[in-house]
Length: 105
Image (cartoon, rainbow, N blue to C red):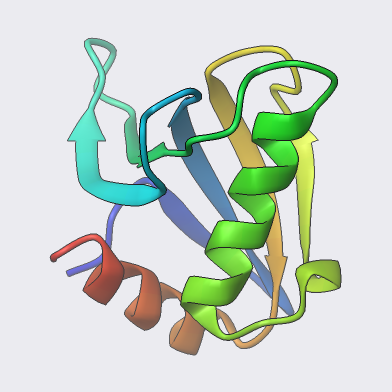
């Protein structure tokens, strides 16, 4: 059930995402394993990758899907890369369960 894409840390989780900007729609396309064995959640957003618009759309989309305030999500790394690491504040067990459901696991 658990995935290497999300890891629990005390009062938050870290989520590895592979973002596809300009994806035509906002959607979660499941968990995928990279060539190096790391896993990430595949997410697409319709926003363009200009001036952080796709990153903001990603945070807003995931906050809505998880039923959280946008302020609970932040970008730790990968601002200009497709692979990003997010910090999501909340109960780790609950967040991981919800993410697993969203990812179809």
